[in-house]
Length: 312
Image (cartoon, rainbow, N blue to C red; front, side, top):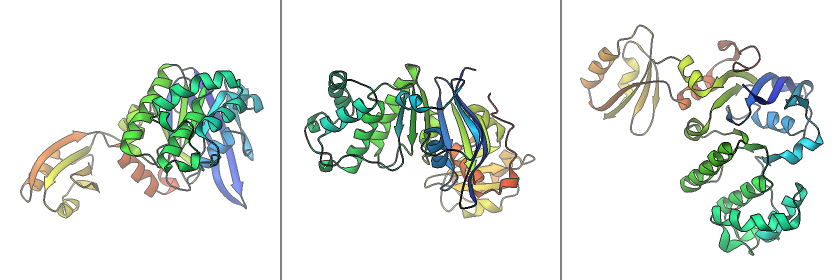
């Protein structure tokens, strides 16, 4: 594996409280890597350390075999969790200004702007002020400023915040195009469905510690194939009491069950179908949503973090 970014046992504490605790992971070159975890897990702190906005108390951050320095920032497209744009400037002015800060000439920036605005469905707003845009439009504008200088590494903190489903799909398509062009993408999100669709690799962080790390397919298989998705008609509350059902995650139109290793899935199906109509019954790997919930609820001692990065 050709690695792009490596974190080696980085730690950060604020007022004696540890935000990131001995975190080690590897982001492969040309991959989409998702950093997942509940609020307060340490994701944003980790990203800020990668960007050299704050320094780790201990540990090292290595990019292509070298420690992070100021030159590295010109090769990165960074979309922070706290969005910030110059409200009184036009879209053209904002994009041009931020592109120049990243090393593009004004002439090169202007050549790229129309294409990006059309791609993000913002072409008609080119000469409008930022303050006239909706929150979602401002999010798309900031996404343009993140990519306009053609960065090697793209870092996106809570990328999907403020985007509707149509724009989520638009952004997802652009990220896949960037990956095909050889870019390395690191993003944090709480939107498990999108992480599951996009990521080659993921890590899950809980209370500042790395608890799961690796290729997405391997992470899912590590949790076993003892999950069942059941689409049924009626109240599903009784399912929790069926022998062999260890955990139930309820959605609007279906439930996801995790069974004990000794459980008989056909017997579980029989007991469910005795009480309600079953429209669909599917054996499956656990969803990333289900894994995320398990990790978020668990105590740190319930997990053993891998030594270094499991895919290194």
